[in-house]
Figure 1 (cartoon, helix red, strand yellow):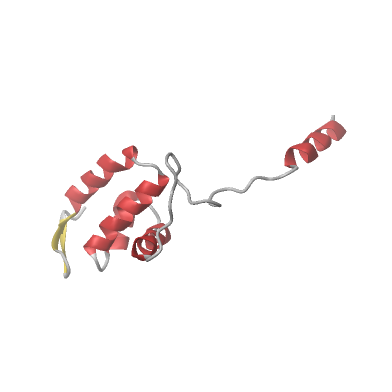
Figure 2: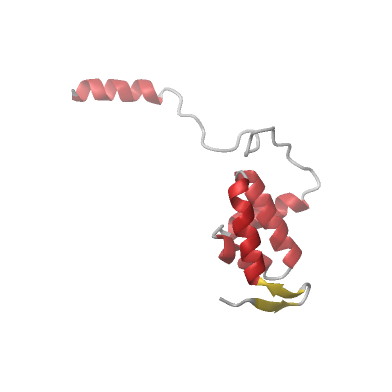
Length: 109
């Protein structure tokens, strides 16, 4: 692993220290907070930051890119206390699926 590299905006970036920072923080954060923390780090690094943070954290580049867009947005999304997704986010409920499944199981039995 490269311990540091040159970045035009930030000078030297110590990847070992950044890796330690990421490994220390991620277990303490929920999904939304992780995305925002990592995206803020990538944004602070500047050019190449998304790729570097993605490689060190294991979080996909599209996730970090979306996070940077959220950070840059003029209109902020309000996330409720104890929540990690905006209203309407996440998997959508399958209405009536349990009833259909129960009927299928009865027919098989």
